[in-house]
Image (tube, rainbow over all chains, first blue to last red):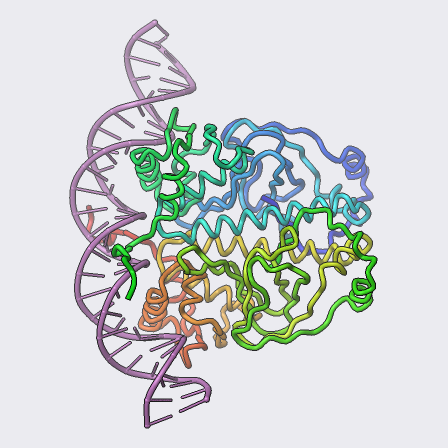
Amino acid sequence: MMTVSTEPGDASHLSTSRDRAELALPSSFVRFRKGEPLYRTGEGAEALFSIVSGVVKSYTMLPDGAQHIIVFSFADDLVGSVQNGTHLNSAEALTAVTAYRMPMVAINAQIRSDPDLQFHLISQLSHELHQAQAHAFLLSRQRAITRIGLFLRMLEAHQGTARGSLQEIYMPMKRSDIGAYAGISLEAVGRSFQTLVNRGAIAIRDRRYVQIINRALFEAAIFEKKGGHSGAAGR
Amino acid sequence: MMTVSTEPGDASHLSTSRDRAELALPSSFVRFRKGEPLYRTGEGAEALFSIVSGVVKSYTMLPDGAQHIIVFSFADDLVGSVQNGTHLNSAEALTAVTAYRMPMVAINAQIRSDPDLQFHLISQLSHELHQAQAHAFLLSRQRAITRIGLFLRMLEAHQGTARGSLQEIYMPMKRSDIGAYAGISLEAVGRSFQTLVNRGAIAIRDRRYVQIINRALFEAAIFEKKGGHSGAAGR
DNA sequence: CGCCTAGTTGACGTGCTTCAACGGTCGTGG
DNA sequence: CCACGACCGTTGAAGCACGTCAACTAGGCG
């Protein structure tokens, strides 16, 4: 998850030798263990992260202690929502994660003169925007089973699994995380999975590996209408 | 609402005289009447629009005929979700709208050499990303009254109304549009407004002008917890 | 003056949240 | 190697907020 502030990106403080060193060595590898935070809300944002492998969740804490998950980030995604030099939300590794750490000062200095970097940034932002809009669409659906279906589709797409393949989907996050992303309770998450299993649409192994075993049933569950009153329709 | 494809943006077809003319005159004013479409899903996307005045809704049609509203766009927002040269969604003027029409060919040609344009694009994309994430957050809340409250806050912010001011909020969209944005039925929209009025948090005039008359009550309604089991009566 | 759309109000059913207890899994330490 | 504990997940029960359907009222425009 990435956001870039609209501030001018003042590079005037690039005169210290430490900053020059960071510029010369613009990025470095970092590693996070499962459950480890990449950063927390309000911390000074010295760098963005480009995920090499693993899965990261970005989230905000609600006043009542619950958390809203903004996005799950995978390989090649950028993580680090920044505004006014501070992180807007928190990020945590859901699996072991390796990432490039890209200091903000290096980015700010380079962005002016590097068209490739700019293009890459624009592409990434476009991608993130699509993600966010897809997330909003997911959240706009009423039925829990629909949200879970769209969530699975998202995971599928992120794993490069061809649509219609029967490959297993890796699901590293726990039920409560899925709930916090899909806007439903963790119980509803479990029950929705169970319903999909009972209908023969998916199979679950190990609680972290799902497989869509009947695509037609799966899609039918997603697009299923609600109160319906059995719309023979007409009139 | 804006999205830019990741495609290379081939400018090789800039050799026709018509395209050269468009480049020389990169943008032109256009006007839309209330209810008029800016474009529809699937149409070839020849241009983006930069709103000068008025309000635009971007939406997608669902298989069952319902519509999901992606974003409401106001002055200075960009409109025109494009991928592979085609519009991904539809856009419609909610009020009389004036806008700059910026041909894609001109943008593609200029973007490579114009750092200011790039910077502007990055800023706009960041802004849109924030909007989309705020929308997702709104949709993740359970109670209808909360979604309506956050929606009103969004309108407030877009009209430059200082937080805490008692100024009237202009609300050009109809109940069904608000519902399609907030993921609730149009009846629930109306009832939520009514509840806020009854509680003395807001006042409504003319069905299109709302005023927050008691900020504390308004915020309380937004953050109100759910099941609660009414704390007092233990157990 | 009458039609058409937008908005309101009411009644009813239901799918979700919440609360609660149980079961399964994994990591840790004896 | 097994036992324990903490966390994750499942299952069950009850209440309620919202969706749906329906009928009515209010505005807007010819």
